[in-house]
Length: 159
Ligand SMILES: [Fe+2]
Image 1 (cartoon, rainbow, N blue to C red):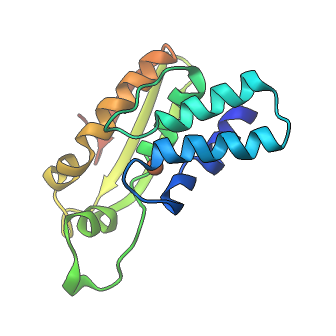
Image 2 (cartoon, rainbow, N blue to C red):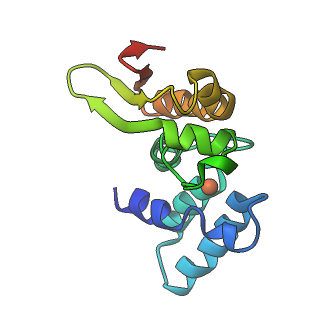
Image 3 (cartoon, helix red, strand yellow):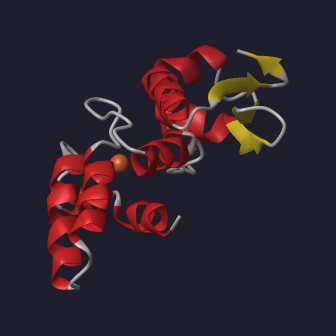
């Protein structure tokens, strides 16, 4: 849990350099930070590997920490908010349309569920998938790494 928390806090530090390949630059930057703090090399390896694999373009849930980081990061739909409706693009519409987002682990079954409430007045479910399909597929792989089944519910409908 502690390693996941550290990875979670630092995972987007690479955006300081550039959004492109930020997972890779973030892994290198995190290595330097943790190495300078004399962290245990095995723990550093786990954390930087997780950070270097959190992007859906090239990432893979290579260990349990990476899997947890992917699930937390990629299920976070309600991100940047543009308040100016007149300038909304598809990302803004999706961010604005998702009213509620819950990631839950079901205690009875080996199941992790992402439950979304989407207001289709602002963005369609298709808009959501246009942006989030790759992220949801990576979430499914991450859940499998943790021996969990990933389920997506949108507006009470199992997807
Ligand atoms: Fe990121």
